Image 1 (cartoon, rainbow, N blue to C red):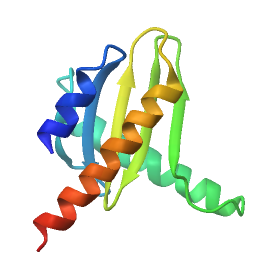
Image 2 (image 1 turned 180 degrees about the vertical axis):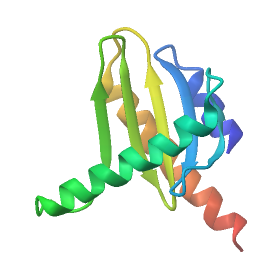
Image 3 (image 1 turned 90 degrees about the horizontal axis):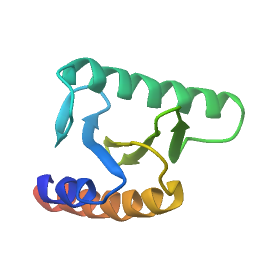
Length: 117
């Protein structure tokens, strides 16, 4: 898992890449913050709330979330029972980040499936 997340953070645009359980605990990742526990819990809560919102709007579960801020983006995507959270700084290509996250999520899901056998 660390290798997959490390590859993500080696991209110029990506600042943080963490893997969070749906319970809010950080499983793995590179996070440039001292508030790891809080960020993990808030990431899981935000993704869960967005899922509830999209379901209430009769639009199904959220697959990928992009939040644009003044200084970059926060993107979240479900990876099996985990959530991949990536942040960027400055102007970046959200589509490229999304594509890289999708590849990473497929790899993570495969890795988790192999680990369970």
